[in-house]
Image 1 (cartoon, rainbow, N blue to C red):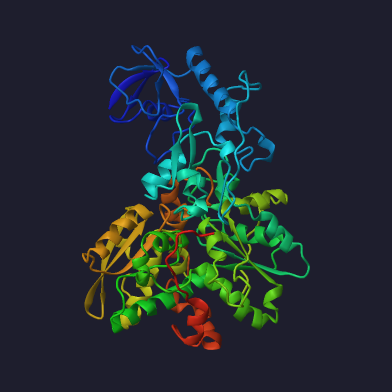
Image 2 (cartoon, helix red, strand yellow):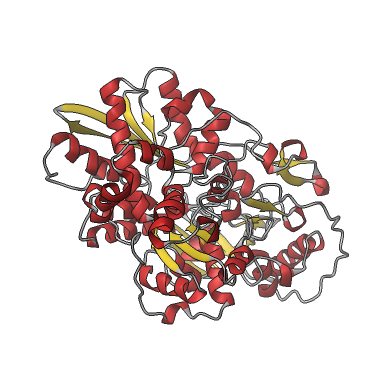
Length: 574
């Protein structure tokens, strides 16, 4: 431990920690802007400046390591004036039309200006307005709100390894943009939305589809149904002041019904269905000598990456659609027929933790009825919270509701889809019992759990050891891809999720998502699984009935047409 003084008070800090870490531990609030937990520290903004005895200039608390005997002052006039001046200079080159901004009252720059008491800027406005980038269905980029903090660059480069965004220009002319000033849709952007998740302002956000959904709800000629992904129920409460790690399924259902949706369904239902189809596809490939390793296909960010960067790997991808798209296909066929509703009068909405799902829903391949998308609109967790607040619904006072039938009966296996390793574990529960023809002695596959970037496990299938692997973030996926291409991979099945922690850490989840919160959401996800009466996808009675009444059999002609798709090499997405 290191001994030092902060504002005259003796404190202890772990060796290797920073002044910012030590100050937080003892209740000293030092403002930050470019700093973000889990990202590389650049100390670009210098808002966290402090005085350190013996130094003739201010030091950045986020990057200054603690030292024995160090004396730090965080609230002197010199420090305050520096922070205020820096913030005013940022505001002078920033679109300050806050009341029409998506981050109004939830903006780190706005909070900083209020904390510093900035009511009138001493500096002249120098902002030169640039065109916004809204040329894709997922991400909206407004350079006029960018404060050049570099967070989006770091998450794109260091976490995902995709290098889409970069600093361009020098000094006060610097801008953050895709290479050569292109649109995101012209670059190799996967639309994962991690840049939007860490942006402190509203320079990068998801494309807002809330008004489209309200218009559909208010259209008396439309039957509007909604599906809810498993990662939503362990995160939505954070939007309403709750700590991470909770579960809000019942309140979420009630909120959706009060918004006016005609039916509220669970994406977990088609997560179970995905496991049945994907598991049988894996077994079919093993039996017939098909392409191995098979790689999961439920993450659209990963699919985009594979199509752009590794078109020679597409034969490794499962042909299964994602649970979101399986739901849409069934909604406008099976559900429409059984309910006597014309698919053209139906409007299907998805609530997803993911911005890339917006792009996925618009793909040409995702049509069960020609000229009609299976999923009409996708909302992120943040967009749903916005809709709930706009209608005066007090989320915290809602009583628990229940999902509607037929897409409301699910299993614990589907619930863990939201966590990295969850798809793999759900698949192993089913495949193990199908192949070994006996119940599992232990249902949990703990080797594929956890927050390690790459996890692996070996399972016994029919007396033979079979190796599987799990990767989250595209940077870690690239490691496994390199092994496959080099002929060094002995895995039969690989799960890939683009976002850190899996869907629970998606680009559309509540702002302020850190690895600590991701881990807490994952733990909550496993608690949901533990509490379910049925924990294996193949034991879902409604799935069994669906095959009996409609799909006939896994990998059959009807399921192939509705639940499977294909991928193709491409660069420009829009």
